[in-house]
Length: 411
Image (cartoon, rainbow, N blue to C red):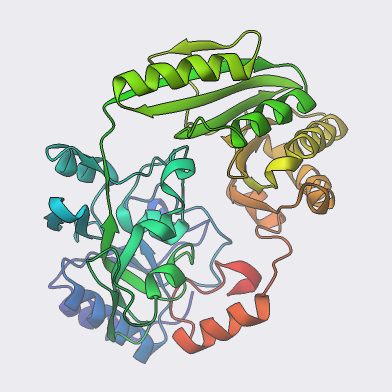
């Protein structure tokens, strides 16, 4: 923590109209306890906070509801937590254009209620449902990514405050708007290190008329890969394809959305495609879209779809070598799964799995872990394009005001 000038607290308080408090252990960011928490209720107040931080050398970490505040590396320093939950309004919903403009602190569950009356939805379903800003900052996705694409494809415009307190806007509220530099895509997944989102324009989808799931057990990594590739190469057009895997076996489940008659026909085709043991249901499996369980270290692992079997065998080998159970769940057709392991064996497990990363064509990132374990781990691992990312950080935040050290390569 930096030495904070005695006059900073009053100035911070003035910037947010008195919404400042002393921070406590509950506000820690991966074990780093800030000095203050400020709670702005407008973009202008966020501008004031960041302008002051840039002037005085304060380090600021943006936060929503905190569901993913432990993700990323521990910050080098954290003087101020910028609590954005006060920016929680649905600014505009243009149902005819399937577009909504929403403040970054709006909770995803509240936004879902806002949109449901018009039969629309923001097609994201991350396991940890926080705020719109947190969704964009972490690029967290769930099963719906197969149908709707990644978070960055749903963001069509942003209002963002730069690290020096200057306001910037990009995109618009029309799906085909391409004017200007696409800050929304750049900031998606940047973990609050380039700017602070205060408002987002998002592309929506209609609520589906009918949904059904088809699930089948898989008894080996090669069988799991075979089933998943059959789904990927089929004409089923599933809305999601998930795997639940533990101890060398698991289940693959496919979701079908659409009009009732069309879903019934596609479900029948899916039962035949998935093979012996496949069963249809009008309710999802109880594990659908949830994080794996059984440990306190959560990893995000990407992979080539055709190398799923290689990944599952690598997970099982690493688990056996370290004498731990490794539970895997995720969206296997789009090549993203989550793996949960106990903290005791996590460092060596991660090391072993990364050694096989080239073979399954992906990367291993540590998302969440107990603080002591977190500090033992290389959270991000090897990263391509790091020099370019560092140059972008230098351009956007030369004084390292925003979340210093949390992103790849200490950015």
